[in-house]
Length: 496
Ligand code: NAI
Ligand code: MG
Image 1 (spheres, protein in one colour):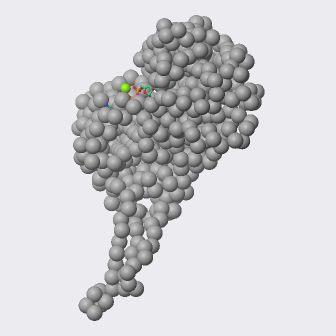
Image 2 (cartoon, rainbow, N blue to C red):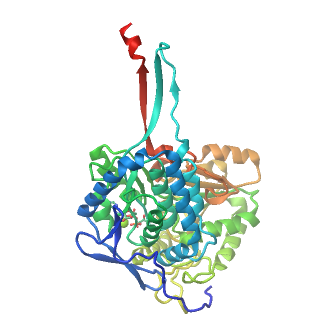
Image 3 (cartoon, rainbow, N blue to C red):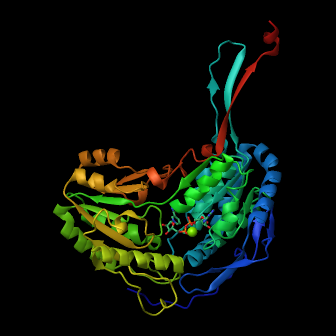
């Protein structure tokens, strides 16, 4: 279903950075002089150009981060936190502009109030709560304790699906700990990160603490983990690229965390409250057009309730509205032509494998949809757990229903992919909920609560090939520190 709309305004904000990236507090082009167009995926309009950087630019950014490091590391932690709070305030004051930049480059509708200021405040509050421990000693002349220290210059690479929150969480935690950072946003959605970096400078976070290098993954991106003076990495994206990042880090013995997406199951038991489950499941696969690492892309359903669930899910998915970023719709386009091709290919793969296409499956037509990378919300039923659409991350609004006979089979199927990011369970039975919470292999389990939502400060990350390390929790700043044990003895006592 599409909706009518007003003609869009031009994007007019001094927070849109055109042709420049942030290195050492300066807005500079790439050493190559080349640029990459950033498009609006609903219209293919060019929003801005970004520098096409490579290893020379990353070297430049690492040097800038090294220069900024001593003063930032040695600034007292309360002052570091205060600067992050000020950053959050500035973002909040300009939330509408930031939201519009992100909606245009990602192609999503408005989600209401911007979450980024709250995310940064949660992190800012941790800045001066990074504590070591006191250690027992063999004699009263000794003192022993641990210090939590930043790694130094650290690197980050983020994807395009939620560029604002990804940037805030990764950069915020790293710098709150006293590190300085070289961050590469995705070439498809770098404008929100650049805008946030601009506001960080305005907030008084010193030049060189946050450096944003733009460009392609195999060029600017690859140069970051390959750099020997990057002391720690954070990466979010595909398992294929994550594996390349880890290889590069292995060569330099650089520690890292990886967040690599999922094939998250939603297990529906016979006693599930379908009034709650059905809308949540439809939203879980269409929010951000299914381009969410936590998307609940498999419905594992007990046969007793299967037919009713599929009927209601199909009806619900047919109510999902889509259109460009400025409309009050549920869903925008996919991010780019490659993802469009990929999602349509997977729909073909599902059909060819013999899954039942219940609804969707096509590129929608209609006014305002001509130039965008749109795809209908798509529901496959009678999906076999061995089919590729049941095992591989599609990253689009494509939901696969897999019927099962009992709880044992539900667990086996739910755990039967290489991924393990989020798992949801729909049941009214406490015993089922307890058993499933323990048995599901996932970093987040939601009982009657999809996408791991509803919790403040839940650590977020994967089991199995979904990655390792946790972000967003109460120890997310601690995670960007290393431990030093200090033992001390009274010098007079030494001579005794
Ligand atoms: P990707 O993993 O290739 O890209 C993510 C980030 O890594 C971008 O900033 C990109 O420029 C960078 N990158 C790419 N190649 C690199 C390299 N060789 N060295 C260093 N950095 C590199 O993901 P892509 O190609 O955009 O999407 C492909 C699939 O990956 C999606 O369909 C989806 O399944 C998955 N994905 C998962 C995400 C998640 O949230 N876990 C986010 C984005 C994609
Ligand atoms: Mg790629």
